[in-house]
Length: 399
Ligand code: DCT
Ligand code: MG
Image (cartoon, rainbow, N blue to C red):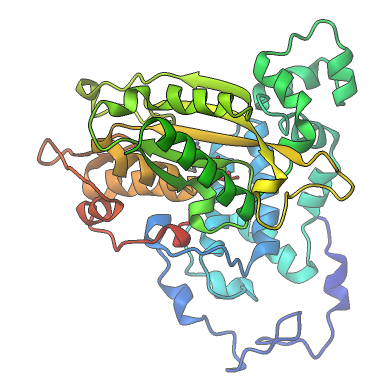
């Protein structure tokens, strides 16, 4: 059944080729393709993508569909919509007609159909249907809890559960520690972290690291190093100038945070990194460095401009998710590049390395399969240079 777009009929006769629905006029009057759309790479690591998104309506629609495919474990379709969204995010201007996008990579029939609907009607019926779909809504709700992924959400959903109160009342469900803490701090950690809060946490982690290891190096990574205004957590890479010093670094930082009364939750994973096992024959999403997933108590008095919390919340503190990763210093650049994101940017860096250069890139190393050798790097720029890529600044990696 083809759903007819209601607003197509409402299009006024004045709206001709070259004029968009919002009334902006293409100065050439023709449906010409902006020059910058003609040469877009299929690889996100060859595009510059800032946090300014001129095509947010379309990319939001794509992301709902991608997320639903993820819930249904349809990886191919999920990736197709994520790739298409990523291409549109890199464009410096809003797409006004489907014709403008004819030379863009990563746009298939389905993505184009959704895009056309959004361009014509301002919304996609497929997306709207999904947003009011019980299964989608329930998965969205359940996966918003720290420690609950699509598999658990699916189990709960198939068990007939639809709300938190039903989950919490069900005696057959045993929440693990992560999920218990997820429910306990749900209000705080399902919300977003602000840039000011991230900055304050940077100082806190910096002080905690240097209190115990004066030469420790702390770098803000993840979404906040890409200049995002908000994130779901704050990510840091921490290391020491001398090799091996990083082994005790995380436990010391964790102790220090505990001493300060900030540690609400800590899931620490010691390093399983073994240099002799490189290069990894298969791509692994997670690296082997020591890391910890934390929930910290952040005092409002430490945040410039105050906490990002609901009006009327007078606790004076909030819980925030913080990830710390601790690579050996000679792996620092690879870890930093791997954690800087975005996910799509990282995915395409690895895909580009393999497909175009015959190299294997992960968060540990870069291996040249043609020469059978590892390529050393002490900065992110070194890695881009080895790959023969123009350097892309972190704030341009919001693919
Ligand atoms: N990462 C990745 N592949 C994954 C997960 C993460 O390459 N499957 C990398 C890219 C981003 C970085 O790790 C940190 O992950 P998140 O915190 O999940 O992402 P983010 O970009 O920081 O987003 P947010 O602002 O929501 O935290
Ligand atoms: Mg993050």
